[in-house]
Image 1 (cartoon, rainbow, N blue to C red):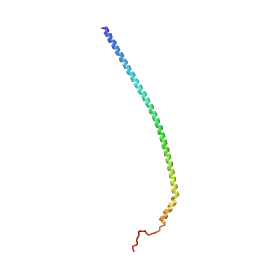
Image 2: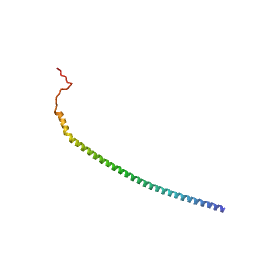
Image 3: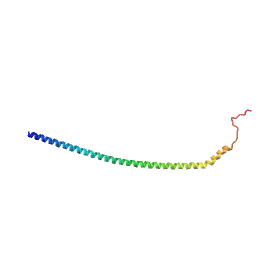
Length: 118
């Protein structure tokens, strides 16, 4: 009987050691998962920062080129306005003379479709 109780006692101890090892393995697994998760989050944060930096660089390039385009368009517009003002100043006298000539120098004529009722 003592040998049986010793055998049972050995089995219980072995079972306890196995349970302890399983608990320890679960704890190590949990720690490794937590560490892997933290490393992944750090890697994700680093990747996000890198992509945000690239985005800001591209955005600044685009905004810079847009401001350059805006400046070019403004300068082109000013040039066209000056050109139109120059043309206006150059031709305003001749157009006014033509207009006044048409209004003031009337030559009364009988219309071709007019029929005299005599």
